[in-house]
Length: 81
Image (cartoon, rainbow, N blue to C red; front, top):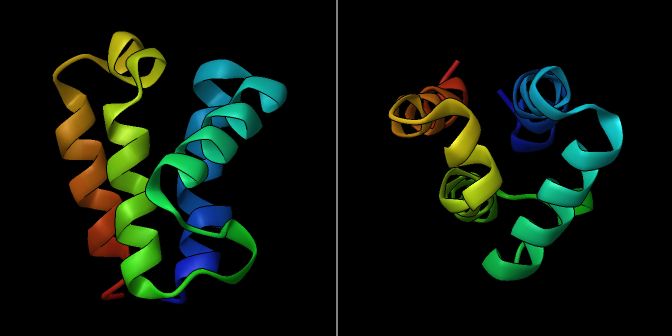
């Protein structure tokens, strides 16, 4: 699956479910800056850095706890589909 498609169909919907649309966008934007990734034109390496940054975000880890690592691994696995 294309990295941009995984972001739009897997990552963002999960964040929206957890935090709502505005906070999900803030997490993605902030994590993208930390990762040096551009969500508008993601390649696989940028996507991996982005989801790792999301997985390290205190808001995300605070909400999902120990499932953060599993969730990030699942998102990375979606690239292979």
